[in-house]
Every structure is written in structure tokens, then in C-alpha cells.
Image 1 (tube, rainbow, N blue to C red):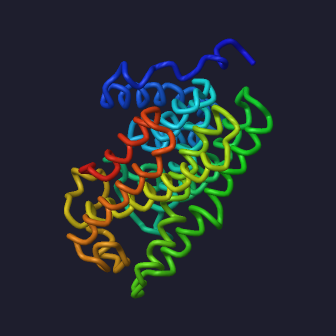
Image 2 (cartoon, rainbow, N blue to C red):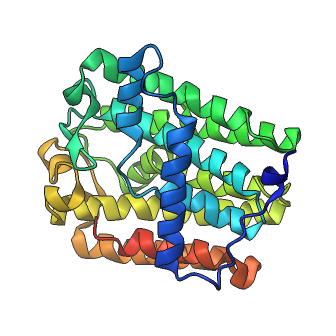
Length: 308
């Protein structure tokens, strides 16, 4: 292992405000993603340009923030945290590219700019998603770390991305248009579609630092499940209450497409109350870690209290 790879995530939680820490991680990740994606002049240039268009210069980087917050908790090396964060962000970006295509949600706006199939074309968008998924595993596999934990991390990312994770949730979502889902059915869909990658982000950051004990895994999974559902509840609230300029994507689209949401099933006040309950659940799950889990608590607050 190189000397650089042995360096821990060195910024103590007490030295930076949450806003400063968040800006630092977001800035560092933009640089890291730029290096870990294929250069835009590499053949095939159009595909590589479109991959970089899909990933760079946009997004809140919630998943990388979760990786780094959990990585801080267990002193994950900076280079390991960066690769894990880049990998999960590439999977997330691929899912957005495919989700926006006409055969799925058919949206023209993402992160405040034209979606990939609009900016380029549908075939390129399809290939961008495929290539980003593959690149995510290249990035994670090439990291310098303990091989046993690296295999665990590769498996975590694969499971969270596949038919029992994000893709499965998307399949349920597409099959649910126009249906009257129960609250339990809606929750199961979003545990997969949105929650799986958020939960994996937390676990990837933690495993990047050490082999986890069973009670640590349980606590982080409970936290990840709570924030994953909270993220989707707030997304549904914002889709019903915010405008497209604020969101950076088409507002009100779920209602227009007759999709079941927390707001359509519970109503707005009850959805807001549920988001707050899930935030409290996330905080409680971190009790075993004490003050060292400060960043994860702050991210739970951000996820529930965000306005876009």
C-alpha cells in the first residue's frame, strides 16, 4: 500500500463546520471523479464526453458525503473513501441517465441541464449508463486496500445496484404507474429504488476503514434504511411543492405521470411528519458510536431539511 493510501480521512469533525466539510468533500470528489472517469478525448470520444457530462458539474453528492462521513467514523484512508464514493456516484449517475430515457420516466431536465439522451441521443445515453456501471466496479476494484474487505465492498455495491436493489426498485416503480399501492408496498419499492444505494454508501465508507462487527453493521444498516426512506419521502414532498428551477428537474412529474408517492398516499402533513420520524430513527441508530458519528447525524438532518 502506498503512503498516500495509508493516510486516514484526516479532517477531524471538530475542525470544520458541517457546511465547510461538505464543500470540501464535494470539491475533492469533483476532482477525483474527473480523474477516475475516462478522458473525453479517449476513443470513443463521444461516449466518454457523454459519461463525463452525466457525472460532472452537478448533483448534491449525497452518496459520496455518506461514504466520507462513515469513513471518518472508522478512519478509512482518503484514497479508499474517494474510490468508494466515486464508484457509488457512478452507479447513481448511470441510474439517472437510464431513468430519464423515454422508455422509462422520459424527462428532459436533470441537475439543471438537458438530460443525456436530449443532449446527445438515446443510443448514447443507453451506452453511457452501461459504461458508467462497469467503470464503477473498475474504480472500486483498483483501490489499494485489504483484499477481503475489498471483496465485501464490491459485493455490497453489486447487490445494491441489481435486481434486489436499485434496479428492482425501478422495475416495481414502472409496474406501479396508475396503481393504488399500500404504504407498505410503496416503502418496499423505495427501500430498493432509492434506499439501497444510500444504505450501501454508508456501509462502503465504513468497510473502507475496518472489518465491521455485527452490532456496527446493524446500526449502520438501520441508519441507512431510515435515511434512504427519508430521502424519498422528502423527494416526494419537494416534487409536490417546489418548482423546476429549484429542483433542477421537472417538478410535479410524479403526479402528472399518475405515480404513487408518499404525498399521494399520506398527504403532505403526514409525509412531513414521517420524514421527521425517520430523521429521529436515524439519529437513534447511531447512539452506539457516540459523538464520532456527528457527520452522519448532520447528513440525516440535511436529507430531511433540504429544499431541493
